[in-house]
Image 1 (cartoon, rainbow, N blue to C red):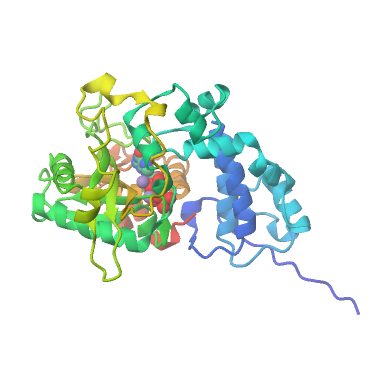
Image 2: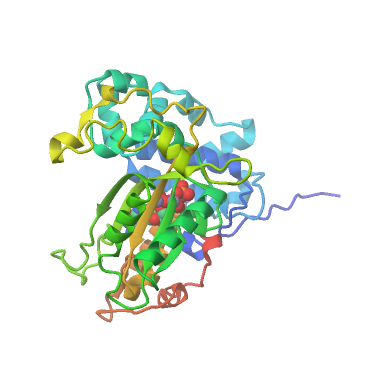
Length: 408
Ligand code: GTP
Ligand code: MN
Ligand code: MN
């Protein structure tokens, strides 16, 4: 009697926005490997390759069980030759030689460390590496000029490379909520980004702010930032103002993925709690050398020259201090008018790949153009309104996928 092992191939729709991807990943070994290849491609400014690996990883993330054989992958979308080769080697030997040697390579390690500095992207890191800078100490010893973001990034390097916990996100949410309501009663604040998708940790915390009356949100960002600053919560902030209506292309052209809301990239000073659960903000602010203003010689200086300084001027400030009773946390704020709220909410909840796939679906499958501001239907030549995420999915002809299942 012949026993044939039945191979049940997985079946998966090709766009990530057609799939439900929870945080439960049965193929972590495979997806970590592909994500590393994606990351390396992105760090090398090969974005096309990066997306290809991200798509391949996303397909494996939504499978209901661990992959055991290559046969199960037959017919799956988005798995290119390169990804399949990596998967095969891992299934056969437990690891991918390409991924392992990349992980150990000097270039990858240097790119990782340098882009780990807030404000440093792949281009800058690459330039520094070509100039012989491989790590933080070499950067400090160099004569490189750093902008204000990079100075803050270097100063708070250690803290900003620790994952933010859900508890910290909740603590900052509370502070934010209080602040937002105090500067504009009736304003509404929503947690977005990874924490809205149910992640337990993240690299930052993202908030979307609006007001139920159109127009009332104008000027809100600067008030919120001033109020946070007055309370001593901000170690760094850079606000970029809304340019959606004033841009030359106007609201009629949501073709660019660039977001044009008023937004703020910040570094928050979060007090750690003592054993009795009391926050130590006051204490910490007074006694620590990380106190904003107490050590920054360039802080009252004007514009260009004050914004830049030598890397060597930042001592070894990222070292964790035993007595430090606060920590630096990256926080992103976005303000949207209520008329665009649903689009902003959908656009800023992520994951990044899910967003990219939504826009690709809209364009390729529906001749529509989706941004974080609006949805334009090219066939009808008009904008489609929506007051909820559900309506946007419906306009796009997609089944609604809740935030917790957008972890592609
Ligand atoms: P962690 O922070 O690592 O937990 O992941 P995250 O998913 O929260 O990522 P991140 O904070 O980088 O971004 C949150 C969401 O905002 C993602 O969906 C991004 O696509 C989106 N996002 C980030 N920057 C921009 C931008 O400049 N424009 C728009 N429209 N969206 C952005
Ligand atoms: Mn985030
Ligand atoms: Mn963010």
